[in-house]
Image (cartoon, rainbow, N blue to C red):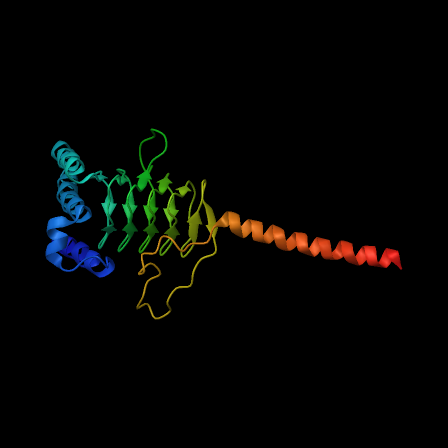
Amino acid sequence: MGKIREDLKSIQKRDPACRNSLEVVLLYSGFHALVFYRIANRLYKWRRFFIARFISQFARWITGIEIHPGATIGRGLFIDHGSGVVIGETTEIGDYCTLYQGVTLGGTGIVQGKRHPTLGNDVLVGAGAKVLGPFKVGDHAKIAAGAVVLNEVPPYATAVGVPAKILCGFAADPTGEKTGNEDVDQINIEDPIMIELCRMEEQLERLEEKVRKLEKKESH
């Protein structure tokens, strides 16, 4: 029950559309999916695999969110809207992460063992993003909407694009009072293509300046 209360508080704190806890309990499919998951995960740990999977599939039918009961999910997960979210069996999610609709935390291949990603604490994954494989996404990292992440993402970094490129990390709050993703902002993230184009434009300008200087010397 402790983790369910933390999930509830996390949604209230981070969703500006939320007016009170009753709304979350009755109307939020992301919260419903987490409640079903917490029950199914307990049964899964007790090796009641069939009933655990039955509950998770029933939850998918009710909420549109599929969470394998074998996944490991920390406190305060916020699944915003949630439709189409898929969380695989060996996925590990830290505390106070945020997932938007259409997110896939999936595996690659059919090998046994660890095959799904591990998210650190306070990770934000934007709408439609796909994180595929048994690697780590570091604490406070952001994954932009629509990104396809196939390799490790360092802490405080941002992954953007298909396949995803890693942008510079954003600063942590040294007081520890705020986390990098409290604003749950998946939109105002730099575009790596635009960054590269700007870099190329700067290089071109420098080359043009050098050519003008050489031409000026030759004319004299």
